Amino acid sequence: MRSLPLLALLVAPALAQTPSAAPVSPSLQNLVQNSPFGSATPAGQAAAAAGPLEFRGTFVDRGERFFSILDTGSRRAEWVSLNEGGHAFQVKSYDADSETVALDYQGRSLSLKLRTARITAMAVPPPQAPTPQPGVAIGAPAAIAPGPNTTEAQRLAQVAEEIRRRRALRQQAQQPPANPPPPPNQPPR
Image (cartoon, rainbow, N blue to C red; front, top):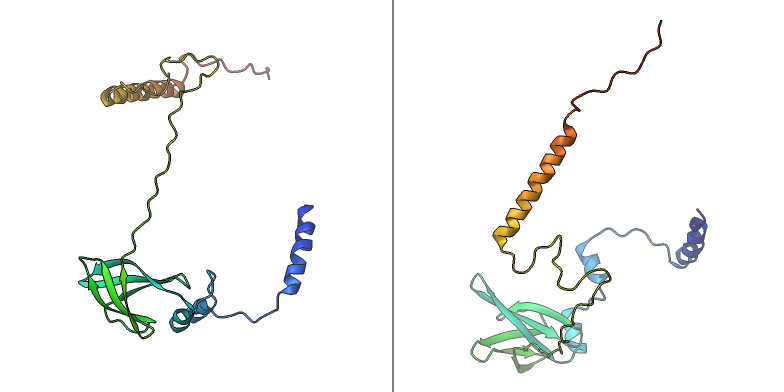
């Protein structure tokens, strides 16, 4: 129980520094304003402070096409449809052949090409030979795991045989002994 006083010493200064505030009722607006994942900025402010936009993806839902546009300054992406308002930008058209969108952003027209993923090749290390373990001969058959040449039918047969063996042992343990032990001697009355 020595850790409890230590914990109290560590927590007390932190509690003393935090201002006491009335509990806030949970609401969607409160979560948007005080997000645990970072600060939220309105779309207009994000566009004013942000740099260029990126076209990140597209999909079709119930016949309507949506586009993912990333504001690189705020690192905030939004899924929007064609001519959807309420954002710092508005997608005007989409060319599926060239995978580009034309949009209006801060009073100017932009054309964005779908961003492609960067794929880098990684060096694969060569396979290493198995290290011998003391007391185990290399190439000796494994006692538990079936080898690579064992067919699935053979493996299933081995499993079935093991199940039969264990059932027999369990039944043998549950049967009462053939000759019950004699009752203990009782003293005469």
